[in-house]
Length: 343
Image 1: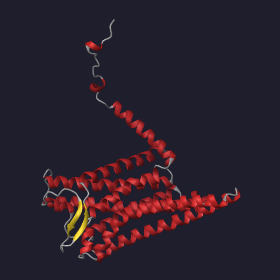
Image 2: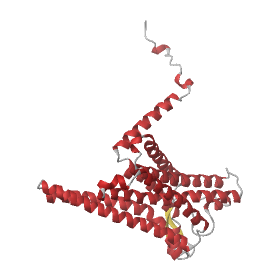
Image 3: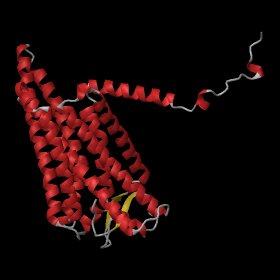
């Protein structure tokens, strides 16, 4: 992803010196002022990426395996998991290549590294855009299922869902290619920020409206059972807490990254903004954390998916046991003289 300045991360690794030990402390910016910089250890970053990678691979595998999950809603969830998988995988790849270049274990020309960096950036950017789009698509799908329940299966059909998914992927790749090509233009960065804000507003409006409808429904049921006040208040508090967690995690994980892009346009040379720019890796780490949390919110709450996931894990364990070398399976288990039972 583009960072402040013209030098890209992989290219900078060709002539870089070993980095200092990661820390949380005060660093001096260009003007000599002190600012807080949170350094993320490469091991922690790669570990989080690996957790996200495995988690989202399991979601994609479970949905692909179970034909009962081949519905529009689960198609969107599967594509969200695939997007998060690509976000984690591309960032892990870039970090690994950077470490190899810095250690001198990988020899490559600057032109090759530039091309590799561009490819990784396009994958990262397109997967981020598609992830945001599929979060919005899931919100729209749930909204239609609540407010147009009787017509849901005629409105959200599998062919329409597939066309929407294809359009999201194509638009994400095209937009990310333009973004990487013109990353130093303020208009491009502002378009990304506006897109993020639009997704945030869309999700907030839809989920708040769904919460209001659910509270009305609960109030009606409680009135029939003469438990209006307590039941309605309890359901409302639970729904508000769920909504706060959902939108709060989304804003917390994605907001700092887009704040970074906004400040690049508004105050690229300001000392305070320069301090924020130093925490770019922290912002990427928060996005990786979001890729870890997404399956917990949107996928693993499904009992059908959890059951399929259990079957996948059990079958994988069986295959691994079957693939063990025969030498390991046939190790002699002779007993020592002192362990033999007397005749």
